[in-house]
Length: 338
Ligand code: NCD
Picture 1 (spheres, rainbow, N blue to C red):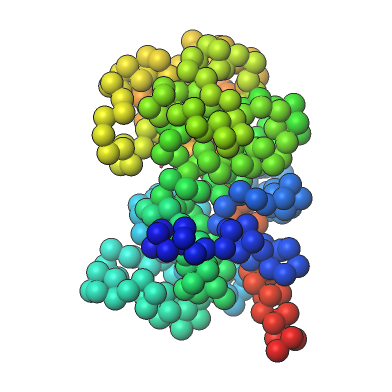
Picture 2 (picture 1 turned 45 degrees about the horizontal axis):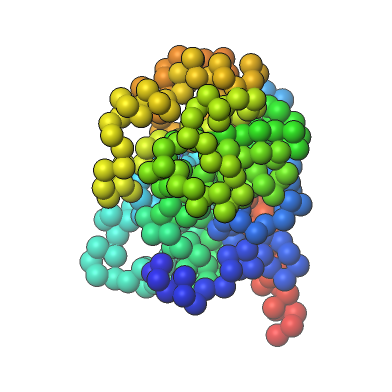
């Protein structure tokens, strides 16, 4: 699948916009304009009430059907997509892929065509292969809005945008912000999507901190500066994103040991003190306490980890409503032409 998509595919940022430049699929933050990313944040903001929670229910997706297709495990992402769809008044179907027809030999394409025949308007896709959501949007069901909920180590655009919303709500404008992402960046789709979003939104500096095995120098080509030392890397930063060691994507020993990793890169109160005193701490979850983050920091006053989860609902409501609109406009456009 990923082979096909990488050799023949259209650039994702072209694929994800309709002829009027509106979002119709959300596959990656890469290549999207600052205006569009800001529109996502502003739309998400409109779904948050004065108490900081997402609004109750709006009728934007009434009569439409959203299908969650999670080929890989998830707790936060799947649940918040489901809640977001419900708050938009959509009908939501969670397909249990492990017991679905693909395990009886049906191809992914046939499974998806069958679900589309049931009237699906949107697929939320998580898959272990990089390029899976892109492949479906380009070749399988281009007329269904596809939202990438994480593909391999490639992209996780809604996580990146909920992180951007969390940063903007805590810090305001991006232009003066120094952001450090710490840990297993090599395997992180969250980090990749965040780096693109931060650079597009005009962050002052994006730093990547970790050992060579998890943060190769080549990552600088994404528009970031690599640091090996926490003290140097955290000095003067406003935002710290800690990442989980993605052991399921490591096929050989990239780490001496978890305790050694914690000693060097685990975010505890002593290392947090290197950053600006009002720095915020984020983590996409699931957190491994005592590996990449200490409990005192995860549960401390600078932590935004649970706020990120709440903001995830509003961001997913924003992206889903925007993509459905973009798909409808595209269909009408073709209808008028044809
Ligand atoms: C991340 C993911 O699945 O990519 N988590 C998430 O979406 N909340 C990061 C991770 O698994 O470590």
